[in-house]
Length: 383
Image 1 (cartoon, rainbow, N blue to C red):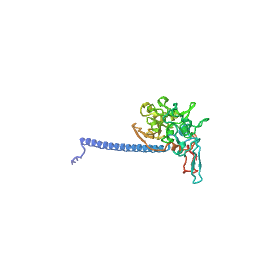
Image 2 (cartoon, one colour; image 1 turned 30 degrees about the horizontal axis):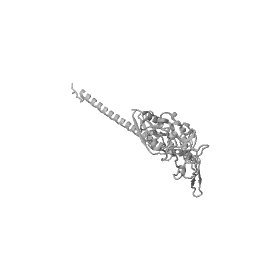
Image 3 (tube, rainbow, N blue to C red; image 1 turned 90 degrees about the vertical axis):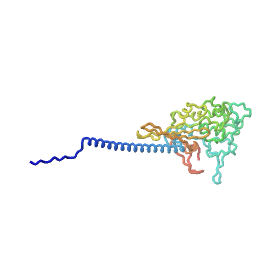
Image 4 (cartoon, helix red, strand yellow; image 1 turned 180 degrees about the horizontal axis):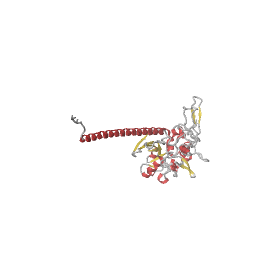
C-alpha cells in the first residue's frame, strides 16, 4: 500500500483575512469620500457659476433700466397697469404741445417765438437767458400773504388768468404746467438748475406766490415742495429744497402696493435728512422702491433673483439706485449688489416713447435726426 503525502496549501489566516477586509473597506470608503467631495465641489462650482450668471443678468437688466425706465412705463405693453403713469397728471402723461416757431427758408433753421402768451410745451425751445421771457420775476425774500412792502410783483408777472393779464406770463405758465401735469420730480428735471422754485398764480381771490412752494412744510404737511429748513418761508433753489428732504418717483410696482400710485404721491416730499426717523425711511422705501423678479418662471432649486430700483432727487442730485438681490434656495443666504449710475433723465425717457393712453402699446419713438420728417411723435414733442 502506497502512502500519498498530503500537500499543504498556502492560505490566509483568519487574522490576515480580517486585516485585508478592513484595509479594503478603508480603501473603498476613501474612494467614496473622494468621489463625494469631488461631486460636491462640482455641484458647488456649478451653483456658484449659476449664481454669478444670474447676478450678471441682473446687473445687465439694471443697466437696461437705467436707460429705458421700464419699471415706470412699458411702452410696448397693452396691459394698462404697465402704463399706469400715463394717466392724467402723472409723470408719463403727455404734455400739451404747441410749436411756437417758424422755419426760415435758409437751411431750414428755426426762429423761436418769444411771445409771453405761449402756454404749451415746446421741447426744442432752448430757454435762452438772453430772452426776457425766461427771467424769473418776483421778490425772492417774500412769501405768500406778505405785506407787499416792496411792491406787488403780480402786477407785471404771474400765470395767465381769464380777466387778468400781467405783462410777463410765459415762465410762470410753464412752471405751473410742469408742476400740475408731471409732479415735483419732473419739476426739477425740466426746469433750469438755477431756477427759484415758486411762481405767482391765483391764490384764493388774489394773485400771490403759490403757498406750497413757499410755506414752511411743518405747517403745511408733506404735500408741498418746500422743506422746513430753519423755519424760513420764501422762494428757494434746488439744493436748499432737497438737502433734508427727498422728491421721488413712484414706480409701477412699489413695495407698498400699486395703490401707492396717486397724483398726491408725485407731489410730495419725505424727510430723509435731519429730523428723519425710521418711519420716514420706511415710507420712502415703500413708495419709491420697485421690486421686479428677474426670473418670472424658474426651476424650484434655482436661486431667487430680484432687481430693485428707486429714483429720487436729493441734495441737488438725481439718483438712480439699483439693487440686485439673490437668495439661495437651499441655505436662504442673501447676496446683494447695490450701485448707482448715470442714465437717461425723465425728460429723455419721455422722449423715447410714442404718445398713447394707458394700455395702448404705442411703442418706442424712433429718432432719425434734427428736422427729419420721419421722426416719431413722443410724449414731449410733435415733429
